[in-house]
Image (tube, rainbow, N blue to C red; front, side, top):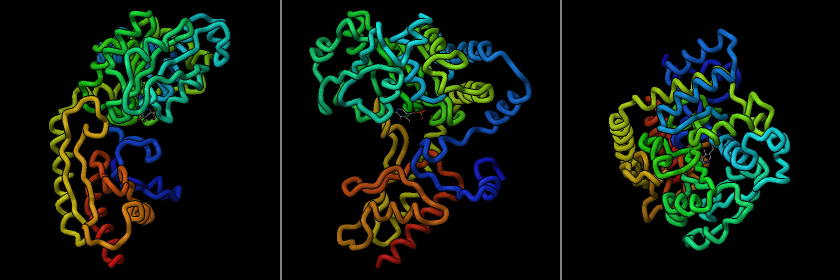
Amino acid sequence: MSIGTSHNIYDKLGVKRIVNAASWRTIMGGSLMPPAVIEAMAQAAQSFVDVDDLNARAGETIARLTGAEAGLVTAGSAAGMLLEAAACMAGTDPAKVNRLPDTKGMKNEIIIHRAHRVTYDRSFRGAGATLVEIGNTHSTHEWELEDAITDNTAAVAYVFGPPPGGALPLPMVVEIAHSRDVPVVVDAAAMLPPPENLTRYLDMGADMVSFSGGKGILGPQSTGVLCGRADLIQAAVANGAPNQGVGRVAKVCKEEIVGLVTALEIFVDTDHDAKNAHWSNVSENLADKIDDIPGLTGKYIQAIPELDAFESATARVFVFRDHNYSGPSESEIEALLKDGDPPIYVFSADHSNGIALSPVCLVDGDDDIIVERLKEIMSNAS
Ligand SMILES: *Cc1c(COP(=O)(O)O)cnc(C)c1O
């Protein structure tokens, strides 16, 4: 059995394997790591090393692959956001590092677009920062950013993931922030693939960028990539594990550091066109089979090469109920899929957009399980 489908340990623990048509999500176990990553982690587990030394070497690899001055393996993109905030507020000053999350005597405001508010932005606040919102969900004006920057501004945050459109473009934010000597810190957790995004935000002038290691990079679930300006990465190190800063709660073990670096090397060497072609193929077949189920329409949506939109980076399948249909609603179908054995988790389900399925975490045979279950649900419904 391949690593992707082996689940003996979960049988032993009494935990069900799930069919993941949702994509790389923490609640579903992140990603399935390539065997070479697991092998590297097993090797890393066999010796003690100086973690500062390992962090420095891993950081050099991240710097090389992202084009940044420096890099750091974090405990996930949310941990990266905490370190971004801590680095911009406390720097490497030992007294300030020690004082966080109490920000007395420090610049402690982080400006964020209303359109960029995500549940993860509490990571900035976790370091002690106060968020200052600009704009609304649909639009933001340049003057709103200019007006929000004060002597108390530690950084401007920029979050990729929410639908683009309501926020100022990153290069414009960088221009305004830099003209006032304020750094711009980015959360791009789920923006890989496409691999172009690994270097893109730094090229646009961002000072620090945070990615998840356990999503499209296919590294350990509890890792992330932080890259950017050397002085800020040094400050992130000062505020994180193994040092005793506010980021000490988000430590990464030696096996994970090695796993992330190995996964990142594999990620940049991957033939992403071939991978996209595979996902398109899987999606097209799945959509065709779903389309044959009475009461449902299956639609294949190809990946759109729109680098800023997380939603369209890979192919998708959308399932719609027929017009004269009287069976369970989208959210009821979602619940029924989740309730079965194995549970099937979908990307999203809502009345206007149908049920969206992502191919990126499906393993061989999952498509048939999904089709059979949808058939079952639909036949019980009529
Ligand atoms: C997934 C995600 C995060 C959190 O990333 P972790 O690596 O799980 O910590 C943060 N921000 C956005 C937009 C995300 O999609």
